[in-house]
Length: 365
Image (tube, rainbow, N blue to C red; front, side, top):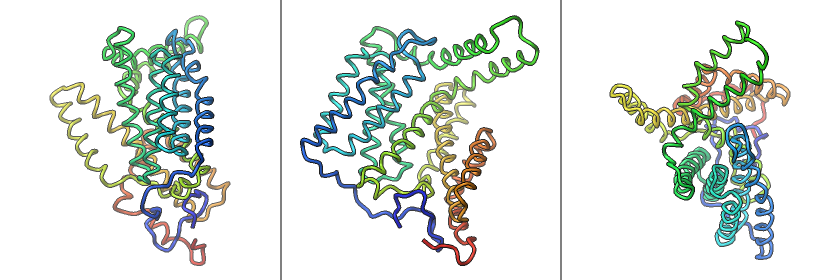
């Protein structure tokens, strides 16, 4: 069975639902030096407009729009992933050097420039993990960690270059973004006259939730970026033959049991931070736990996808179930159920149980 195709059904002979891949790293595509230079040139052409896109003024800043900066960063990371996967280390280094030089030249170490540079690093890290055939959950954690460290380090460098206190501004950014967004929504949705009672209650509810959004913004932004990059790079890998052959299907996605220990440690650290009122420790623990929670949520979606394939659901019924899962995940208890499904799959092997429940005579490939 070609493990690179998500559409293929998992085996139903009692396997655990994990992809069986040959050990060892993926080989580098055998491109001639002129073709490698052509890949570098194409990658730089794709990256060329991104620093300007990330520097478009907005209601948040005269130098950047957070949404456009996020889109630009995602595009930069995807390009870096594809180019790094196709090139030798020397050619990939040339691409990263040229891309960094151009981004700094145009972006002048502004917030958009910082995001683009961090995305280049994160995309290259994800490419290296794919080339080394690491588990996809490890690749996601490496990508998120690399992105976070790169953003903080580069923003600190930006503070030195542009003359501001980077740490103080980083602390203020989440609150500023949420409050500015809520004020903009108030002016855009209710521009005329006094608010009706129902509208006022809706706005009050949003303002009441604002502290939680501010508190968890690092984890939410990081997971949103990582998830979108995960989806984009899985599509890219299908076009790169050495990586496509070693790409497990989505139904096999699972979280390693090794992450149970960080979850336990973070829960203990969070409890200690609450008891002794250590706000920085609680901030770090809460955001790390929220990120891991969503990784287990993604694994829960993979379990559901596997069960649909094992039951040989039609494409239309799978689409309906995916819509139900997406809507269900819009509620906290829905995400919690799917995250629990991904967590307890370590011990209960839901994919294996689903395989045993397939009716006799079903396809075994």
